[in-house]
Image (cartoon, rainbow over all chains, first blue to last red; front, side, top):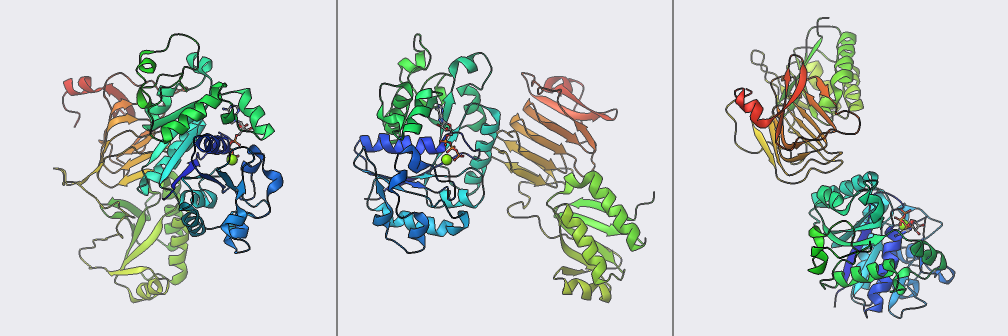
Length: 271
Length: 241
Ligand SMILES: Nc1ncnc2c1ncn2[C@@H]1O[C@H](COP(=O)(O)OP(=O)(O)OP(=O)(O)O)[C@@H](O)[C@H]1O
Ligand SMILES: [Mg+2]
């Protein structure tokens, strides 16, 4: 049994990488998967807060790298779902405390004890990003429907492709269908047109997400919300299921939604 | 002003040939050419053609540092002078013996994977085929023609000594004829670049971005400016070359 190792990255800051990792961790483990989420944003740790685990940290990734603890001791078990574990970042150190080789080593150690390892990448394309992508075979790129985020994802994609790492898929976060319908933000088609990537999911802009992050209980626990459902759908797609994109705008589903088509044929308002 | 130096693009990189001018003049002229055309050359490897001139270590360092300001690397010095040879060796710069009568400079080959590919074309220039999306932050640089099968995204760059053909959408920057060839062309299925350059001419789309025509287009220099025409119009007027 060897876990799939997936890095969530974006180039641009603040587009929702950490939110994605927390929610996919929750959604996958609710589906019975054993998941380890790793916060590689050393010096700016966040993932613990979104999962509501910030008070339970004893050891962190730098302690593990520097041999002050064993992997099992550093992993923090989630409060809600049974098989979700967090390897937190260190807050008082900087990115140089961990190397790409350290990341590979840590993930190899954990790999045989779980089904998924999700690595939360910091923004940028420097060492922190290098650390985050080092151990992974798969990549989820996160963008928002705006040019700046899109161009940064394109940059990251170029770097990954030039290294022959082509298992890349896209999540469009903070989608506001009424805005893109008016032409005030990019549509899903415009984004896919530039990147030429497989679409893994679309997450709507939602106050529910912000509130859930603040409470430390990711929205993926709440299947009745549109965003929660979006994350659960993404988790199912990760497991290979064909899941139709749910409409983000009310109205009759489009032909491709009725056919249950995802990916490139998605129109501009499905989750 | 009489040029103290000459910069030429070759298949392998750039060659800078020193004339007989004094070193301060050489540096001043080099600085001027780099300032005005530096972007053309950025990132390249340079061969300095010094032939019989005696260059001191400090003089070579001055040239090297100036080039470094424009991201260029002094790789090779072509010389038949012992003083220059010794100084270059001290600085770990490769020395190539100048053949006094036939001074052919070979710059170091361009960086990783930029080796010219594809068959040689009728005009003696080689072509390079790029079969992928050129993404933001990526630069394709080639002394001959460049053909891209795929898009050139915003933030991506193509620099070619010859023509540029994009079988896809051109949304980044394209510089054809980047060593001064005014006859160079840029063609794209969808021509909507951030900026277009041919030789020393620069064209920028109107604010808000150029809307590409819905057919393939060709850009070329006519009467000292870059013009863009639909492909079949350019063809009806006779092959543009
Ligand atoms: N779908 C959404 N709807 C509304 N708010 C969101 C959504 N996704 C993320 N946010 C909010 O956006 C902010 C940034 O999210 P997050 O921290 O996940 O981004 P990030 O990419 O990890 O940032 P950084 O680059 O700083 O690590 C947070 O306040 C989060 O609550
Ligand atoms: Mg983050």
